[in-house]
Structures are given as C-alpha cells and as structure tokens.
Length: 111
Length: 114
Image (cartoon, rainbow over all chains, first blue to last red; front, side):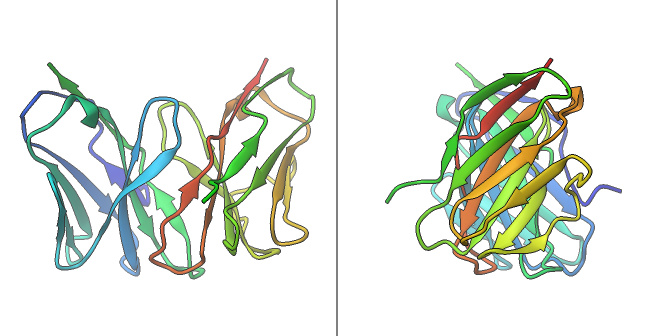
C-alpha cells in the first residue's frame, strides 16, 4: 500500500459545482497534514493546512479523520481558476519532518 | 521576501552525461528539500537537509545521485551518470524547520535525458 493515496481523477466539473477530493494515509503516527495546489508546469503551493477540528478558508473546507486515516478537501462554487492538481501531503514525522506527497488529483472546471 | 531560487530552469542532456542543479533557499530557512517529480506523479523526496546535515536521504539513488549543502545555505544536486528514467522536474523547497511549517518551492529544473 502506498503511503499516501488520492482519488485518481481527473475531475471535470462545471463552474459553480461543489467537488470533494479524498486522501488516505497509511502511517498512523502522522502528525500534520496539508493540501497543496499545483498549476500546470508550476511548483506546488500551500493551499491550506488541515487541522483535527476541520478548517475552512473561503470556499475551501478541509477535514481530517485520524481514526480512519482520511483527509478530505471540499471546494464549493468552483471557479475556472480552481483548475489545477491538488496534492495531499502528510508529515509522517519519523524524522521530525518527513513530508510525503500523494500523486495528486487533477481538477478541470469547465465554463 | 525573495523566494526559493533554482537554476538552470531547463536542461537537456544525453544519457551517461552528468548534470548539476543549484538551489538557494529562502533566507533563514534551516530545512532544505530536493524532490523529484515525474510527469503525472506527486513530488518524491530525494534528500532533506537540516542546516548542513542530512536528515533523510533514504530515497536518494546514491549510486548516481549526490547532494550537498556545505555552508547550510545553498545546495547542489548532482546526477552522474544520468539515465533516461531521470527525466523529471527537480524541485527544491525550504521551510523554517517547524513540523507544521509551510514548504516553499522553487520553480524547479526540468531535466530531459535523451
């Protein structure tokens, strides 16, 4: 089993749609969790950290379920500019900082 | 604040040749990472430095890849000799070193091995 797995995608959704991405991780000792966004041929950039209580930033909501080792990202009212690959990142903390990236889920928001 | 700098941005070489990449992290960032990102995949950590010491190089193919961060600031990653499967984007990232801190990525070096 891979350390971090994500929905394979791609997701093609119309503008205004709500879309959810799922991510699972295998290391139960993982300490911190993130969603990064990567535009085509660009570097990854932090979208949001994921906290145990769940957190929201505008149209984006992240949830963490430690018992199920599952992370989700919900995007409401999708915009064309949301088209990108979304990377789930888990800090397994074996060495204090060991960031493992998932393979990413590509989103295309269509007009 | 200046971001993570990398050079070159693009490199094309033939197999069995050598290549080196350079990274200058954000000023004051103690932790520096080198990732390999193959098309269609997420970044894979090659090596992580904390100041000038190696924290994790478990996924670095040490028979051909090497990296150093001698003065705890900028870093170089070398491949010698290159193979076709090394074609990828090599991303450098830095962070302040705290577990929850954001990693900031450079623009990457796109390597093509022919």
